[in-house]
Amino acid sequence: RAKALGKNRYEFFSDRMRVQALHSLQLESDLKQAIEHREFQLVYQPIVSLLTHRIVGFEALLRWHHPSRGVVSPSEFIPFAEETGLMTAISWWVLREACHQMHLLQAQFSHKTLNIHVNVSNQQFHQPNFIEQVQQTLRETNLRNNSLKLEITESVIMKDAIRLADKFAQLQTLGVRLGLDDFGTGYSSLSYLSQLPLDTLKVDRSFVAQLDQSSGQEITQAIVTLAHNLHMEVIAEGIETESQAQFLRAIDCRYGQGYLFSKPVAPDAMPALLSQDTLLS
Ligand code: C2E
Ligand code: MG
Ligand code: MG
Ligand code: MG
Image (cartoon, rainbow, N blue to C red; front, side):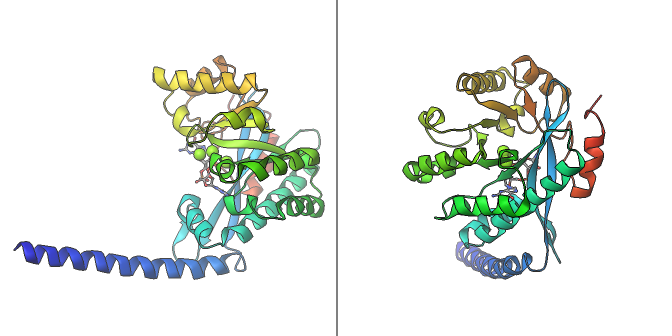
C-alpha cells in the first residue's frame, strides 16, 4: 500500500513538473510576442496629498492582456520576465509609454504640477547604458526630467552598491528623482538611506494594512520620522480605509495612494480624475 502511494506521489510530481515546464515554455514565447502584439497596457494610480486629497502624480502599473488567459497580474509574470531576460525590453516600453502619457496629460492640465512614477526593474537598472537610455526616452517624449520619479526596490540597491552611487549621482544631475519602493520589506541595511540621493520613501502596503494594531502604528511612525529626518518625502501605499488615512495624516505622512482614493485606471480615465478638484470629499 505504501508502495502504491509512493508511486502515485512520484507520478503526481513528474506530471506536475512536465506541466510546469510546458507552461513556462509557452509563457516565454507568449511574452516574447506580447510587445509586438500590443498586449501590454499601463494603468495609472493617483498619488494624492493626504491633506488636500489633490492628485500630485500617478504611478504607472503594468498589465498584460493575454489573448487566452485574460489579464495576467504583474506579480505573476514580472519575476518570470526577469528570469528569462525579457524584462529589459518590457521595462523600456513601460518608461517610454508612461513618459509619453504624462506629457500629454501635462499639456491638458498645465496649471497642475504632476509627477509620473515608474517602477524600474532590476535588469533595466543594471544595464550599462541605463542613464543614456533614460535621457533618450525623456528627450523623445518631451517630458521634463524633474517630472519623472523612478521607483526602485531594496533588491536593486543590494546588487551593486558601488556603481550604484555613481548612477544615482548621474540621475540626480539630470534632475530625475528617485523613490524607494516597498520600504521595510527588504533585507538591506539602513546605512545607504543617508548615503544615496533618495527623494521619496514608500511605506509598504503591508505596514499600512496593520495600522489597526499598535505594532503597525509604531513601525509606520518610525519609518515616517526616519524619512523626514533624512529630508525625504513619504508616500504610504495601499490605503484602503479612512481611518488609515487619518492615522497617517496625524503622524505627518503627507502623501498616499490606495483604493480609498482610486484604483489604478486606464489612460482615458485620467482626465476625469484630474477634473475633480479632489478625490474623496
Ligand atoms: P508596487 O510598485 O509596490 O505597486 C503597488 C501595488 O499595490 C500595485 O499592484 C497596486 O495596484 C497595488 N495597490 C494599490 N493600492 C492598493 C490598495 O489600496 N489595496 C491593495 N490591495 N493593493 C493596492 P500591481 O499593479 O499588481 O503591481 C504589483 C507590483 O508589480 C508592483 O508593486 C511592482 O513591484 C510591480 N510592477 C508593476 N508594474 C511594473 C512595471 O511597469 N515595471 C516593474 N519593474 N515592476 C512593475
Ligand atoms: Mg511602485
Ligand atoms: Mg510598492
Ligand atoms: Mg508593494
